[in-house]
Image (cartoon, rainbow, N blue to C red):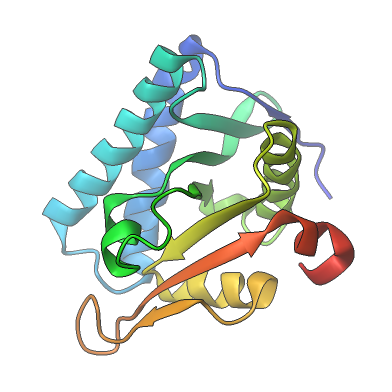
Length: 184
């Protein structure tokens, strides 16, 4: 396994993180076969950039990022914040009070090396240290859904064909105590 440092982002990381978001999101959309959805790609990139601004502006109170670095290069990210409007809408506000873990990205050339798992474990500790015992997570990406199903089991909400024919959306509610007992 690579020698990875996980830490909070610093303001001077902003440009590199924004480039990281662009690269990973474009790659994800392309691998999902929806690389031509330029408006959606741009909206997703802007959303992540805005989350980062919110983190810095609130000193982690509104959004809280962790980043993974290898040889001083940003290779992964994860964040948590309030459950998204999409999650609240799709769960009919059942998850409205939960925190959402998201922006779990790893550079393509660093995927399948345990970086995402390391980021998740660091996030579990962060959440517990902040008194948060459960969170939600969602995904409309087929490849990511396969990973989340392995880690968290079947989703609590399965929205068939939400993004189009054969493109489901999945939402999980996860108790951290279940994860720390070896279920992940």
